[in-house]
View 1 (cartoon, rainbow, N blue to C red):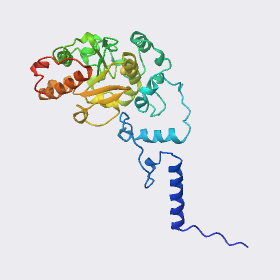
View 2 (view 1 turned 45 degrees about the vertical axis):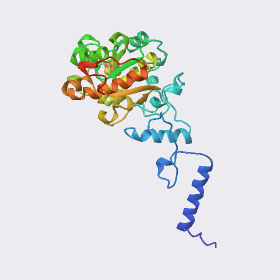
View 3 (view 1 turned 90 degrees about the horizontal axis):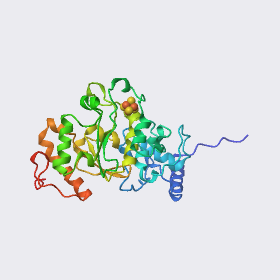
View 4 (view 1 turned 90 degrees about the vertical axis):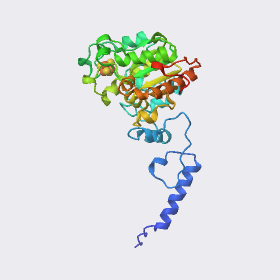
Length: 312
Ligand code: SF4
């Protein structure tokens, strides 16, 4: 009768594990970082990549590991590569609805990626009932401005005035945004493009909820793809956090460049916040000056509401 093999001791197990890790390294495979393997080096991150650890639930890094080490899971919606795929990788990894690293948000609605221009996109949205805000709105607030603008402003969601008129940023906060555009930047509203993350007004001006963002953000991303501005200015905490999929406060995000679908984005305070905190206008003016530098436009002598361009 044969004697049963004795269990391997701890030293043998550790040696085997070390060999295995070395083998993985030699094969050039990554993806062990998130699994707690001691000594696995973190892969270098390209400057334009969003840190996956900053995603709200940390799914981004796990999803990247999946791409590198296993075939992608079957998608319920066509995964046909977008012509913009190379410049939209960051956005691809941020689908709020599915969390699927392979899924570009515009593919959530088949045919959306084929809309050729903004009128076609508006037609695609139609009398939308894709989320629970539909029965509460007066008008869908799609967006206004130059369809080929080099500068795009993205806010949060329509308020009462916008809901009634079907146009973004037309209330008191809208007047301040117009002031920033005209007096601060020396441009007109018609020269820029203005829209929101959410196209329908949330009741009582509450923050949009995650399912509403997930349902509506594909339209914003398609707007960005179609306008292809040189710079996006994100207005306020919600809009910036929703687009970048971050939880970082706007006070820490503003003043620094980020990237959305291959386009530079400058977060700054929402005009409605400025109405309550006028002292922060100086910070917004500083952000706007950075935007003007990137656009190669001259700074007006005086900024919005008397901010002197030499002060910032
Ligand atoms: S908020 Fe967006 S997804 Fe929801 S009903 Fe309006 S347009 Fe449709």
